[in-house]
Image (cartoon, rainbow, N blue to C red; front, side, top):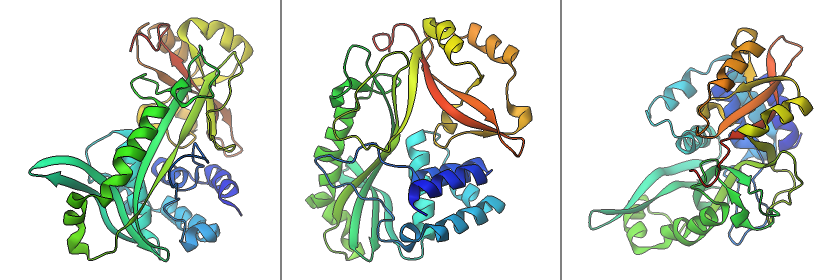
Length: 312
């Protein structure tokens, strides 16, 4: 079983939302496969990635009893999606049988001023590694062909793929080699870590126009579509089904809802018609029934205010 097949299998089996997010974090493909920096899966040297049935067994055991995972996640009150993603990785790497987490979110300071932090320092059979983790949702602009990295914006339009890559490559990855970082990790008595990144997430294209993928994209990257609020009637005529908004903290793994948590058509229309025309981006999912009676996400789209990105 390869990682993609393993993820598809687990998404049909796992029921606990945090465990599904954990499986998604560990097995979802990166957004890019070609970039001017080293990209390394945090479990690259682990038996869990080389023999992913062992990983699947561990995740299924967690799904049966997720007490340890929930306790780990509750140690932080910060609800930012990026931090949640990091904490999922920390939990898995601490449990992996052949990976040693040396430090997580290590602040690097100079004369009392924080320069940044190292997301992860770990040791495995391939040496000591400094890893930067990121999960991102980028939307292609309508006025572009999508090939350039600066054509891809975050749903709030404050983030951009080229800017994020530049920050990762120019600032975050080199940080572990600075004198300040060396002073901070001296007590670990380790060699100079090898710096690498891991960038996962989803890419969204306009619902009604063909768009190229960004340069260096991973052919297996996860995807969705986006539309303006004014487009909804045309969109739903061509894309009927059970649609429902997804809370931000549930944006990672494909959703799985039990029957009584699925909205009916009237609930959705009430929500949509009272949605502020200047509201932030809303992630919508189309649900289909499963053989178990639950409802599974079949696709996802971002619903944007009509002035995006200029209004944000």
